[in-house]
Length: 441
Image 1 (cartoon, one colour):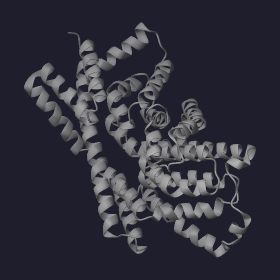
Image 2: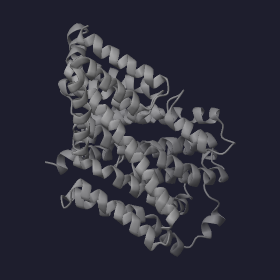
Image 3: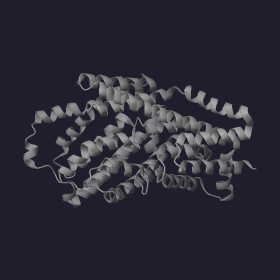
């Protein structure tokens, strides 16, 4: 049996196991170890799993994962994130669509606190959505705003997904995070521009707060809310400025962020035992899940490297089919969109990373820039029917008056905005590469 056929058999077996509902790391790791045992015998199979485990355990930046997840859960569970929305509510209420714009701002800051899409969705659905509906905002538009805004969590640093990509692609986490800043702010800006234009054309979609209600809030109250709401921003700056300046390592910066979030909750009197236990349990669960997935992906990638599958695919695309590097790159992005309708971001990455990441390097593209493209494509896939991840999260968290039909109907304009952002970053890669190149020069 040829190596190409073995690689195809591995890939199809893994996909079949995933379709049966097996856990992602179980399906990928099982296929990798069994293939290694059949190809290279007992010693090769055992060494494969052990080597992947040692590589993971020695990867020092992996320590950032539990730190950032803990920081995000502390800020969320202690309700410090609630202060952010109250700040946006007061300061943006007098603008058409202002509360929707404030929700995007909330999502950007929540993303900077946590790095997970689900955290933004939970906060947006429980804090922002009821208030927006009560104020007469169009339910389709606001569900789209929350879904789109929450997707920023996997692009704006500290993105947990980019940590996973960094491990698999063997790229610096710090550079990937900095590369996500420009595209993340670009996408948030495009979301805000869409809301402003849409509400200007149809003010009933996003009415302003009544003047008498705005008059009840004094200037002193506005500034008090600003101080409370900007606390998470201060925590983010305390964490990131020393890292960007080179005063601390990435791991040290993550520890500073976790400690700062914990102390902020204590000083505000919100660090109860329940908050601490919930944050710790969730951090342990998320961290273990990602470590198992990375371990399985490393083992699977080692088998593919040994089979030479990447070179075979490179030969197929460039020599036999005569495709240009850009055509191959676009086909990769389209495949992510298709897979994203059925799989989450981590499953997509570990399934195709052993093939795509080395191929992208062979084609001469920047792997840091490609990591940003992958993440933006994941954001689009999160909101693509029939099985987009955010669609079902929204359905689970939304009030009964918002139906699945409303949720599906809300995402089209925001998906279009995301595709526009993806095209812009592909045409102008400097949007992603300028900041990391200047910081790490």
